[in-house]
Length: 195
Image 1 (tube, rainbow, N blue to C red):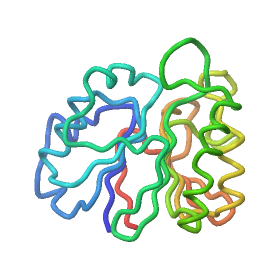
Image 2 (image 1 turned 180 degrees about the horizontal axis):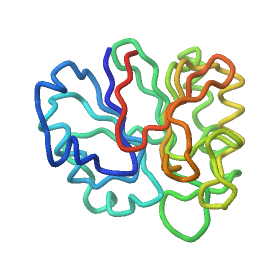
Image 3 (image 1 turned 90 degrees about the vertical axis):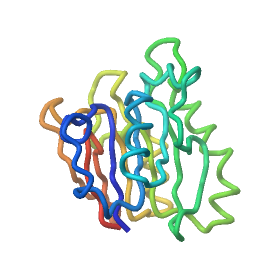
Image 4 (image 1 turned 90 degrees about the horizontal axis):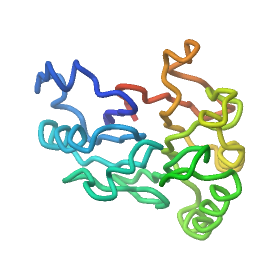
């Protein structure tokens, strides 16, 4: 299964210079947040693949204008083509806005999903906006990662952890990182994952 990952910055390669044949084999699109609603709607129209998304810290406009033809997987565990995908949007709370959570609030969101995770015997892909603590995150509160994400990785060892939020040009952040047996992918702009 080929998955197009997008996050944080609309790609001119896709948005302005779209070539359909380059994306004919995409089976699924996953957005890790902070993209225009119109951009996500455009992707589903042009690529003809389902699009799952989590909210980023700049997605408050989705409340009134959610992306059409797309499915929000915030606080959900879904199964797509046999792949278990857990979605947890938002980032560390640094002001009063939607989709910003303290560490305690994010832990509470995860605790509400524990029974579903138990029933599905874990998950294969973790999709978030923010990174995990100490892995691709930054020192400022806005870009600090969640410790509870580290705990999820330790306990369930998913194949992939997909996040955005920390742009790759912030101190030359890596695209790919390994954490134990989990491959972590920063979905900044776009990346094609062969699952």
